Image 1 (cartoon, rainbow, N blue to C red):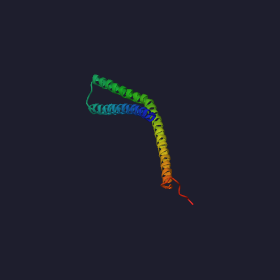
Image 2 (tube, helix red, strand yellow):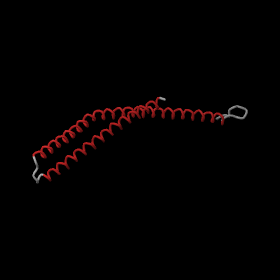
Image 3 (spheres, rainbow, N blue to C red):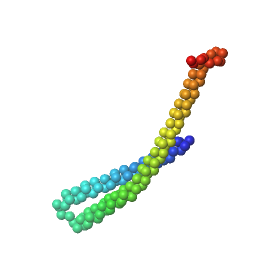
Image 4 (cartoon, helix red, strand yellow):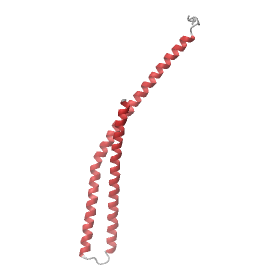
Amino acid sequence: MIVGLLEKKEQGAAQALSQRLGEKQALMEQLNTLEEFRSNYSSEFGGVGGKSQSPGQLQEFQMFMANINSAISDQKKALQQLEPQLTNSRKVWESAHVKTQGIQKFREQAVELEQNEQDKREQTAMDDKAGRRKDGTQFSRY
């Protein structure tokens, strides 16, 4: 019963950790996409830059790049804010995992000890039975 509760708590902590890791992965992918898009867009505009650009086009490019840079900055902040949550989730799971393993090991040792005691009792009973005559008296050991 206790082991079941601890396992349930550990599973909940593992799910929370998994969720945080998924959030981090999604944020990283979005960040990489934005950075790649910024690089590609900047290269394209730079390639066109050899041609004459109107002031309006240059202004649009600068505004667009500012928006991309702002989005990249926001993604980096979101990643930074997620790190403490991820660290906390990892610690909670590790703690629950250690407790679950400790109780499971204790239970296994108790079962093994009980089995050894049962084996000793059975061996003693078999020894006693083997040492008795049919009439119930004991054989002399000497």
